[in-house]
Image 1: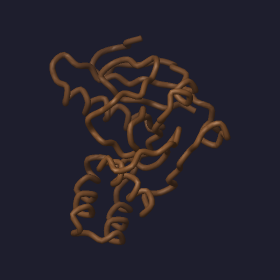
Image 2: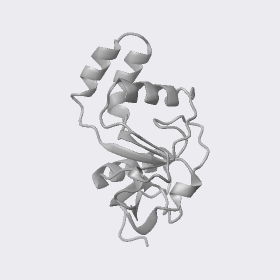
Image 3: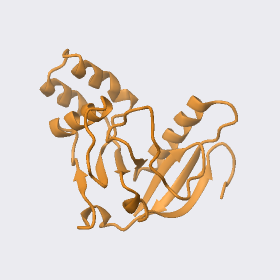
Image 4: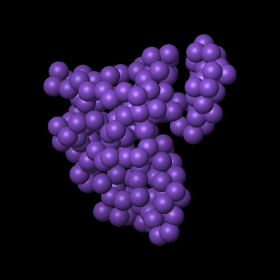
Length: 167
């Protein structure tokens, strides 16, 4: 299966980098099966960084059944439900540090952020929040949280959205 990572640089060897931001599924290396979504992430990151930054998508191959392997601890969220919401909110607050190697679920992107903020502030109930999430087109994200599982990602190629081929 092909997966994609949007960035401002070529990432042939993925790493888990410490970040000041708390992310949906915690500290990890984030990918998606949706190429267009990865391209959007690359453009967003390029705009945030500014200057002469590039918008680059790195492409990897992983075994189709990697997430079902007994070698790794995997958490799957088949839909954006209350369990997913509580996990994302807790991670974004930096309240939990899990031991999963792989986490798979919906992306809580910027369009969903307003809904999540209303839930966090107590304005929306859990039921209202889940109802609002259902109207959004949700893309997937596959995050990798251990060095051992990152070795399973095989770099295929990358491309630069702001010019022609990178590598």
